[in-house]
Image (cartoon, rainbow, N blue to C red; front, side, top):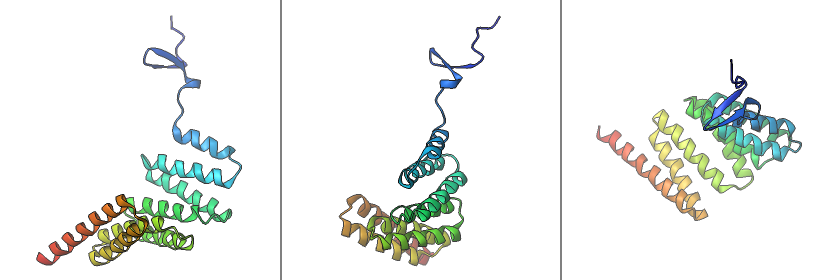
Length: 181
């Protein structure tokens, strides 16, 4: 004789029917995306989808970033387009697809320059610097990290300045180590 709980999940001391169990955040966001009417809302949701997918599935995150590029392009949203290019580049970088990462970071940088988003430019320079380091081009990495530092200083972004100094210091240590050995 069963307890009639075959269609329920047990959570703590409460029995919750499966139908009302907490849904996966990605599934919930995908449902919201399907029902979204405005492109701005779709872009916000896609941003959240990239963030959620990034935690567990880089290829899925890359797909959501691609969808963000498409929606931003179709709606001519110049504010979101470089953000999704940067996200797409980040996914490629984390998958060590460095040429693809560079391609999307370059597109993001161009888009950020068009809308005069200095913070976006600086964060993209940091990512471009990371790619240069992975490729072993330490001098080029130093140059883009210094460019990012200048931008963070112009913004008065203390956290960004500290991060830039950290990157520049690492670059100089690596360059020095390379020449010593």
